[in-house]
Image 1 (cartoon, rainbow, N blue to C red):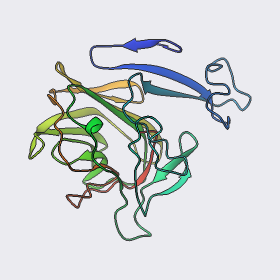
Image 2 (tube, rainbow, N blue to C red):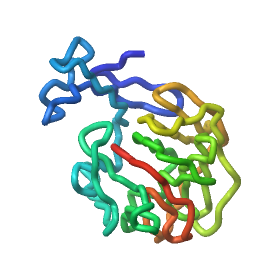
Image 3 (tube, one colour):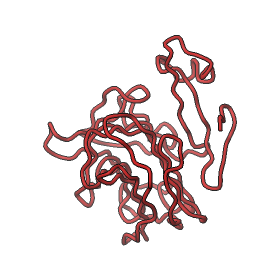
Image 4 (tube, rainbow, N blue to C red):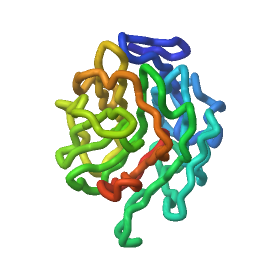
Length: 231
């Protein structure tokens, strides 16, 4: 459904559909003038949760524009993204994985439901391709076929796989990926379409480990090769 200016919801996710022209320097210039038209003909639609905890835009920085959970990295670079700029997590020229880390905070765990989403551009698939990870709490990744996979944990050990999507993300193009979990179960969405259902992750466990984008840095494996935007 078109939910411009209105909150839409199903049993697992509530969000806003925000529209703005891709050529705008400011998101607010023409945000709600799409899809009626943009001067360059490019209208961008972004699904945004209405109760955001954090939002990393990757606009030449790793700042959280909502919750103050700013990221740090000596290796993430910035290039053309789906919306403005994106974080580049391609590690080939550095010969090492690239990761953005966020120090632990109370807002990143200890919650009963969660929605995590963003835009991804995969250059190539490894066995697993980490989008978001907090060790022993939650893992949002793509497998070698581009299927979304989600794990939850107790805070001290990983549990069973909560969800494996039936839909797949293709390489060499931008795709919006979103996972949700509450007491009724978990869901995966690709480009706004339901792509799989799974088990609930239960209460999202908390621990002192950092939040990571692009690589399971604490554990030391499963880098993402490509770009990540608007997490």
